[in-house]
Length: 98
Image (tube, rainbow, N blue to C red; front, top):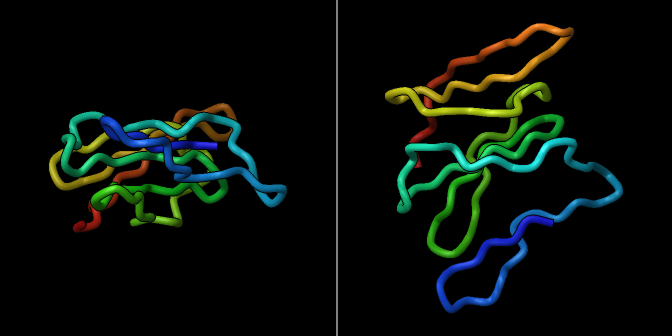
């Protein structure tokens, strides 16, 4: 279960594992995205990219490859990295507008 918490606020469930899927790797906050528009990578199959709008998290990308375990922002691009078949792989794509 992934919870979001603000100052003075009770935790709120953002994502919850079900019998349908589970996470092999914990969600990762993407560095350098700022407190007003944080991005969160949820490694799953497929992997998801979330952003916070107010007090709620919204999925903005739902088709990242299942090997995606980490990400960064480079200019206006999302750079996703991970490994598959014993090789480190990278994918670059335009960052969606919030």
